[in-house]
Image (tube, rainbow, N blue to C red; front, side, top):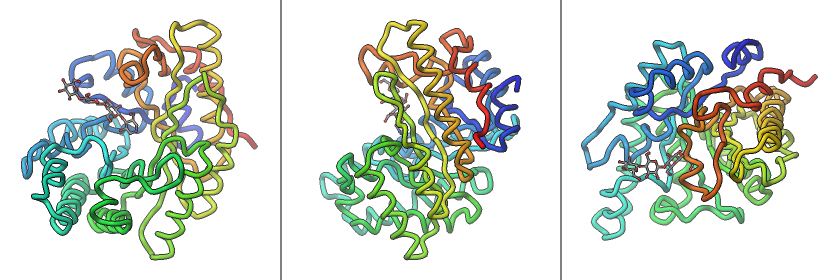
Length: 322
Ligand code: G3I
């Protein structure tokens, strides 16, 4: 294959990237590479609640609309990210809950309206939605978010039902990090899925974020974990892949990084139900990693100048295991 788009096409999967919409507007070279290499996009921030409803009842869809429109023009599918999360909630919501001016009944109605409004707006234009994001803690307990605290565990089933009603054709995912290897998280997430399925709740996919680092071992059991979810009938996706390293960059570290990227793609291709691999940004020029992990970075496939790194080249040689 000559690029990732062709690689995706040859393997019958989607290869996507998270997109910073401000950068998409400002930087022509970023735009060009994004549209050449990827057949799917995810908004890095633009579809999150604080972005689309910064003040109560005041919706700001410009960035999200721009991404969906850009995807249409460039024949890319879209992953919707994310409807229910504990981060990047608008301040009016979190303060309202804290000071008691929003009670549980109202909170439930607010969540229903949020999901319905956003999913309906992009009905028919979003391939898959991350309906709930990061709902399980590292120790396998349910995350103590405002949703769990005020609405009880039933908020998850409700969220999927509301999303399905608003766009019956969108694939609905539960998405999480460290799910590649963390046993308690894996087991709890599997039981959440089984539980939802037993109640007839429309859930269609499992998202593995895939935020990896070369200072940690590659999650060698990942393909087996994917298979356990696939065995429940779910579609599998890698939704936020990146492979960070402790700086400075060296040729050895780049070579190791390349093996992590290609193993991730190989794992996906070894599981029939895995239909998507999305990277959380494609260039080291714009990546969340340096801002979050001190002294780390260089997590993407292309460098700051958009030159392909060894990881990019390695991906192009990956074959579906037989
Ligand atoms: O928009 C403001 C801007 O007005 C302000 O000047 C600037 C100053 O800090 O902040 C801007 O907001 C930032 C926002 O990204 C948009 O760029 C926030 O500070 C920053 O915290 C936020 O970070 C995002 C992070 O989620 C927040 O939780 C990252 O870009 C984004 O990559 C990251 O993505 C998450 C996925 O959604 C879920 N999985 C984990 C992943 C990585 O953390």
